[in-house]
Length: 171
Image (cartoon, rainbow, N blue to C red; front, side):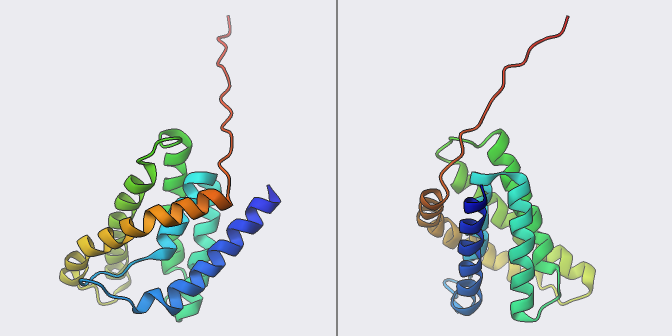
């Protein structure tokens, strides 16, 4: 288990650096691919809700510090994304082929809308037209990244054998 945590931490740190230095400057059809979100969702699907939430908070804090943004903004959004994706992986999504693609599509939409609402609540400029115009290309770009990133993450972090215990009724 500590080796898994170290591998995941190294992978996510590398992805934060790549996201902030390379991927932040890429714009295709008005959308921006979010490699950090795709990798976090992949790790959360394989490792569960608590691991995903802690990883999301850690990489979100690193990302916020890396761009000198509002400290905790990305950390909050990625914590929620990691937790709910991990929860989906623990309950419904395990061993389903469509789980990564479905998770990325849903989490990308929720991430973009939540970022818009959070910016509005903080009193920052929140141009809804720009966000919704870029939503479809961003989802498409993240879906394109999903297959190779999930394959790499699955190879690096072998899926755990989920232990299901039989329920015994008392009485």
